[in-house]
Amino acid sequence: MNPLLAPAVLTAAPGETREFLSPAGVEIVFVLVGLVTLGAGILCVTSRQLVHAALYLVVALGGLAVHYLLLTAEFIAWVQVLIYLGSVVVLLLFGLMLTRAPIGPSPDADSRNRPVALAVAVLAAATLVTLVADAFRTTWIELDTPHGRSGDIGASLFRHWVLPFELLSVILLAALVGAIVISRKRGPAPAEEEQR
Amino acid sequence: MDVLDVSLRIGGVLLAFLLLPLLVGQAEHKVMAHMQGRLGPMHAGGFHGWAQLVADGVKFAQKEDVVPQGADRTLFRLAPAVALIPYLIVLIAIPVGPGGMVGEVIDAGIFFVLAVLGVGVLGSLMGGWASANKYSLLGGLRTAAQLMAYELPLILAAASVVMAAGTLSLPGILDAFAWWWVPWQLIGGFVFFTAGIAELHRPPFDAPLAPEEIIFGAFTEYSGLRFALFLLAEYAGIVVVAALTAVLFLGGWHGPLPDQLGWLWTTLKTAVLCFLVIWARVAWPRLRVDQIQRFAWTVLVPLALAQIALTGVVKVVFL
Image (cartoon, rainbow over all chains, first blue to last red; front, side, top):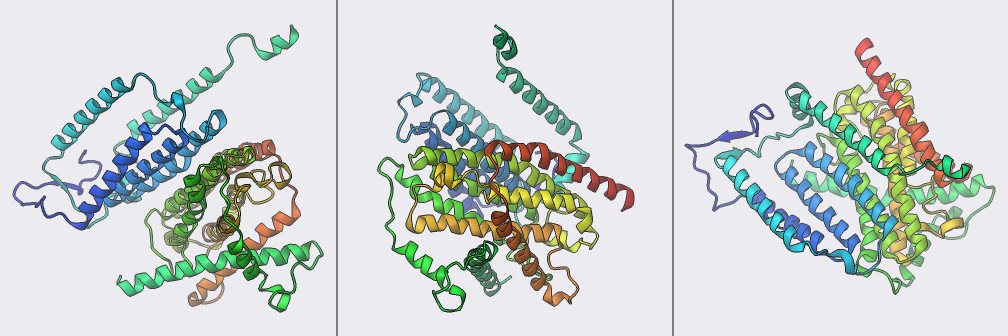
C-alpha cells in the first residue's frame, strides 16, 4: 500500500515481535469470515442453479465487506454493500429473471471450458497470494485506531489521487458509450423498415 | 461503553422496531377508514377497534404456511427474513435525540443506512423468483426495475445534505443543522421522500404489487406468518424512510423546546411524514410501470442534480 494513502496505517516492525500463533479475536473472526467467503465463492461458480449462484455471490461480496470492516476500513465496507450487494447483484438478478431463471438446475450451466477455467483460477490465485504475502510480509495494521474513515479517504483521494480518479471516470464513460453502441440495432433503422 | 449501556441501546432499538411499524399499521387502518368515509373495524377491543391489529396477528399466526409445490423451498422460506432484517439494522444508526440518543454512532452513517436499505429488496426478488409463479416473477422484475430507477435520486438527494453538513455521520449532520436548511434543501427533501416511498413500493408507486394486475406481485404465493413478515417489512420501511427524511431534511431533534425534549420532535416529525405516506395511498391512483420509470429518470434525477448544484453554489458563495 502506498504511504500517501494512509501514512499511519502500516508500520514495518523489524524489532518488535508479533506472535502469529496466538491470534486475537479479530484475527480468528477474519479467518472464519474468509473461509465463508471462499466457500460461497466456490459454490457460486459450481452451482448449477443460476439464481442460487447469484445469491452465493451476495454472500461472498458481503463477506468481503465484513473483512473491510474488520480492517477498520468502514467507508469502503459500506460502499461495497451499497454498490455490489445493493445494485450489481440486483441488476444481475434482474437480468437472470428477464432472460431465463428456471427453478432447479440448468443442464447447460457448465461449459466444456471448465478445466481451462480452473487452471486460470488456480494460477491467478497463486500469483496473487504470493505477491500480496511477499509485499506485506513485515507490515502490520493497528486495529485500535480507525484508519478508513470517510474524511481520510476523501482527503487522500482528492489530494493525491485525483488524476487516477478522473481517469477512472473517463474509462467508465467509455464503457457506457460502448454499451450503447453494442446494444444498438444493426442493419437498417426501424423507420426505414416501416417504409418498405 | 459498558455492557449495560450497549444492551439498553439494542433493547431500545428492538422495542422501536417491534412497536412503531405496528403503530403505523394501525394508523393506516384508521386514517384510510376516515378518509374514505367509512368506519373500518370498530369492535375488537372496544375503543375504536384498537385490538383489530392483535386479532390480525392471531389470524396470520393461525394460517397454514403453504409452500407451492414447484417452488424453491429454501429461498421461499428465507425471503421474508431477508426483506425484514435490514430495516432492523438500519434503525440502529438513526439518531433520536441530542447527546448520544442513538443506537450506535457510525462514521459513514448515511452511507451505511442507504447501503443496508438497498439489501432489503433482495428479499422481494428472492420471494418473487422462488414462488414459481409468473405473477410473482413479474412483481419481482418490477421491484428490481423500480429499485434501480429510484436508488440514484435517493442517493443524490442524500448527498446534497452531506455536502451541506460536510459530514457523513447522521448525528454530525444534525449538529450542523440550522433552520434555513429546510427551505435550502426543500427540493432534495421532496426527491428523497418520494424516492423512498417508491423504493418501498407504496402507492402511488405500487405497480410491483398491483392487486388488480398481478395479484400481489412477489408476495402472491405467501400466506400466514411469512406474508405478515413481508407486510411488517413494508411498515418498518415507512418508519425508516420517514425518520430518515425527518433527520436529513427537517432537522430531526431541533425544535423550539429545550434539547431534553429533542426525541419528541424527531418522533413528531416522523409521525407526520408517516401520515403523509398513508395519505398518499388514499389520495392518488397507481402509476403505470412506464410512468414510474419516466418519473424517476426525467423528474427526480434532474431535480436531485439541480439540488446538488444549488447546495454547492450556496455553500461556496454564502458560507
